[in-house]
Image (cartoon, rainbow, N blue to C red; front, side, top):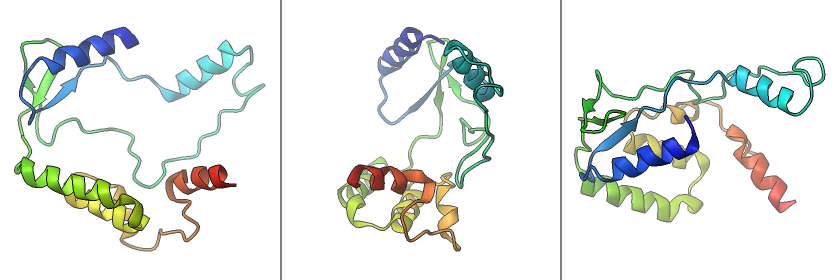
Length: 155
């Protein structure tokens, strides 16, 4: 899907009205990351796995191969063909927004463990916090690569 088409879908979704509904946009068929990487290498004038090696590193903690778009079943159709809605609205939007505001206000004062566990409390299907349940916390703040980026900026 072209960027202009995606923008058009977002703008159309914004006209649907209900602020408590989550809209799912049909962006077309998924793109293979392997094909995308190979195409980008070729467009740069090189040959994949000859001039530039494509390395498979595996999934990081919390990453998924497939993203579930709906909690159960399928979405509810909308008047716009490529937009469906999640028919499971937030149970208590005021509480959720209050807790999200609280999390945003305090996120720089929380440890990574506390931050990921707080997000898991707000989002029932969130799976990234499970790595903190046991022994994956790394003292040098390099979990998910976030700390490495921050350390480079301060170096």
